[in-house]
Image (cartoon, rainbow, N blue to C red):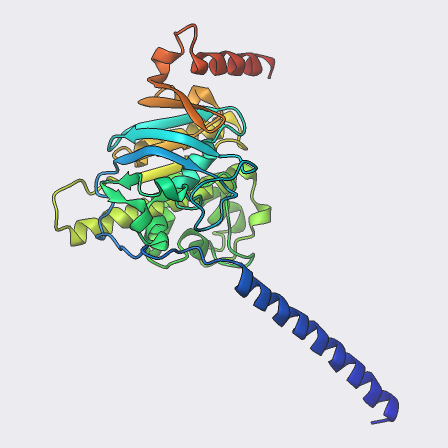
Length: 334
């Protein structure tokens, strides 16, 4: 090895060392400055069948994205995302949350998942089936409540269909196939005849190759699979009286990026698969919420109206009726 070669290696290794030192420094900064999500006292793990009924109570809750841990109130410069929220949802009730952009609809969903914390002064005012949310272990809470986000999330390209459907590996191949057939994705995506049988569940999934509608249907298939696993587990281990098919389903603008035909198909699947569940759905398409038990209209983080959608749409001064008319005009121009 010549002197020039040795000098070249020294420069390369020194550059790699500097890069590594920078990475370690960033990790240390992240560790020192980012506060852990969990708080003291959040250690309750409810019974395996929780939530057994799916009743939700929110009493006088306010929340802000800018409040630091330990602060009792938001400062004047920190706008509240939710203001004095009061909402009681009965077990099995289907509730739609509507409102203009920025009204607090999605923040309400995040509140129920503890992805947005209420102000400490009202931290104890959210319960599900009588259990205070501020005492429940966050990861357990998110495992027990089924949620379908607006933007579907997938594992890195090359991960199998089955791993994307069930990252925890709690289901069988037959269960995975059944839910994909339920959302009409098995024949067209996983096992298309044009491929001579297709790759099957063990085949790699490339999320970029899916249409937006297929992504949303796949995300819905995940939710259905979780419900079926939950029902199967509860049937096997049931120790208390109650329905084997009850729980909570949260839907955040799941139809915002799909066509109306796909939207109608998704709503029918939800109605069939989650008939016994408490459903809280954020939606900007008001025609799909007309069959819900109740609609909640929000504005600037507050609930400004609530009631049966078919009743509200008939009222002249109704906020929901106003949104309905605007939606009709938009549909007429489309």
